[in-house]
Image 1 (tube, helix red, strand yellow):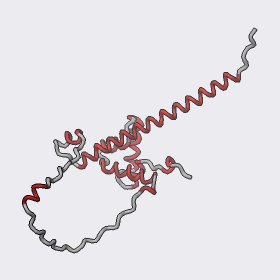
Image 2 (cartoon, one colour):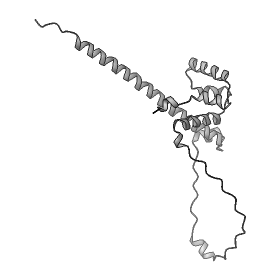
Image 3 (tube, helix red, strand yellow):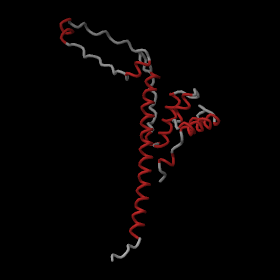
Image 4 (cartoon, one colour):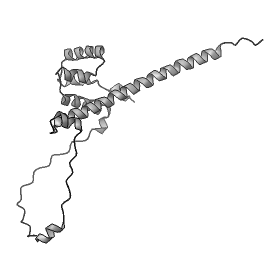
Amino acid sequence: MESSAARRRPIGMILVETGAITVDDLVNALAEQRRTRRRLGEILIDSGLITWLQLAEAIAEQARDLDPEAVPEPEPELEAEPAVEPEPAPPTPIAALKAEPEPPVTVAEPPPSVVAASGGRPDVELMLMERQRAFMELVSVTESLRSTITRLQDELVQRDAEITRLRSMSLPAAG
């Protein structure tokens, strides 16, 4: 069975395949990534080569590659029903209307950073940018944890080898 790491296509490759960037753009961005240690998506967005939306679509494509069974099947489009004039409702007594108060409408508030950046009016792209930033931060933390675990495993192997080597040495006879 093929591991998910073996099937993972890099974001840069996906962006080239979709035509968002050229191979030269990718090579230059990867060179900058090696120099600056910044994320590839940040470099491409800051340089103006791609938008947040294009990066989000590439990440979604990468996620679909990792778990193709999780891709939902497209729902069939419903045909529009012919418009039928509704029959007028019988008049309701005013006393009955006053007895039933309407439930309050609640609206989810966008994060403060989104509201501040948009001058108080949330914008879909700004909300997407905030979500993307949070996702990128999550990916960054995950990658740093993965590298720390790998480093600690390597240290453990080295220490185990050192302990084995010390145990195998002959101890001088106590005299």
